[in-house]
Length: 198
Image 1: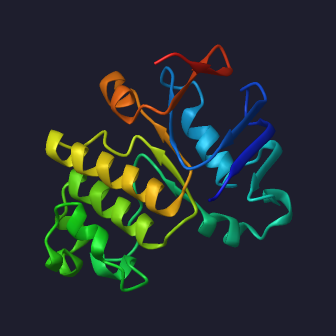
Image 2 (image 1 turned 90 degrees about the vertical axis):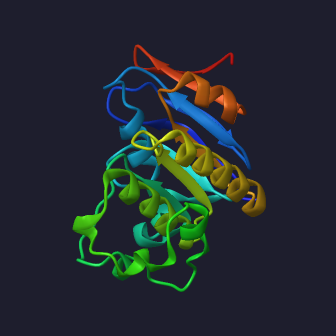
């Protein structure tokens, strides 16, 4: 079981956060611009922060950033695509998540420019999971998806967390989704992150 710990962890104007996340899906919500995405980027060691993040006792500050980002997988709200073909973005042969995202097997041969926003989002999720990170940080992963795709992603992420005993922090504005994911909920208000009632 992977354990993510944040100790006096602080980014931008947010107040220090102390939290331990095990094999569960934690939802993070709050108004636009409150710092949700910044927090995820800081945990992934992509931007400057103070305090300490630990994964299974290993300190982020003492870990090579490239290694840390392999362990701590971050999915931004808008995925990046830097090569022409979809398949060029998958570095290993683990393509099972593509099927679970309700995408055809031949999508690896697609040109990225022909993909819709929703297809890119589902492909980005499959790409991230194929790397088998120990922790998932998901920034509104279903915001551009239809209801069937939302259900598929929610089930897939819950299964991944359970099967890999992986902590998940999921940013969502959708109160119904937060209820469905239903482990713990943290909300940002006036620069403070606190656990909330479901």
